[in-house]
Image (cartoon, rainbow over all chains, first blue to last red; front, side, top):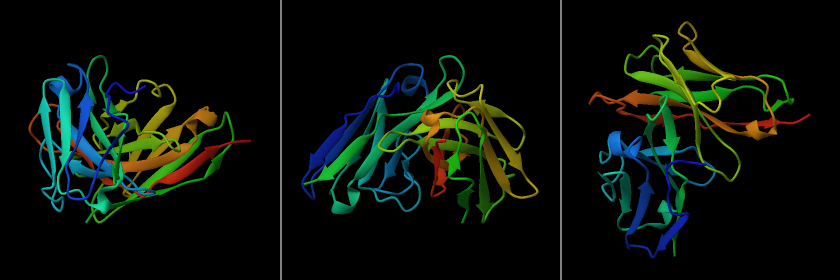
Length: 111
Length: 125
C-alpha cells in the first residue's frame, strides 16, 4: 500500500490537457521535493519533473509540476498519442526512517 | 552520457538469494552527487524502492525489505549490486537499477534521473 495516492486513470482527447494529482502527508510531500516519472508500455520509467516543478533537459514544457501543502500535481498540455503511459509521483517519506515512496500510478489514455 | 545495465539470473528458487549487478558506463560510480539505487515492479503493479547506497558507504533501505537487502558498490568494476536473501514468490518482479541524483538544494533533494532497462526475476522452484 503506497502512502501517495493517485487517480488510477485519466483521459482526454489529443491536444487537450490532463491533470494528475498525488496526495500525501506532512511526512512526505509536505516536507520534501516531489518528482514525476513517465513509464511508456514495456519500458523503464523516465524522469519528467524533479524538485516539484523543474524539467530535465529534453523534457518538453508541455509537462509541468506543482506542489501545494501535502499534494502535488502533474499537468500535461497539448496531449499527444505518445503520452499514453503510466505516470508516478515520488518523494521521500521521513516519518521514521528515510524511505523513498512512489505513488500508486496513473494511466493516461489519449482518446 | 551515463548508462546503466542490469545483469543476473532470471530464475531464483524460493528461500535462496537473489543477486543482481548494475554496470555503469559513460560515467563513474564514484560520482559525489550520486546514490545508486534499486527499484522493482511486479508485473502489472507499481514501483517499489528497494534501497540506495553512496560510495561513501551511506545507505538507506526500504523498511519492509531492510532485513533481507544489501546494496554494495564496486568502484574498481564501476558496478553496484543488489543482494536479496530468503526470496519468495512475492519477490518476483522486474528489477531496475537507477541513479539517484542529488540536486543540491538541501534536504532530500534528489530524483532517479537515469534508469537501466530492467531485468525480470522470477522466484520459482
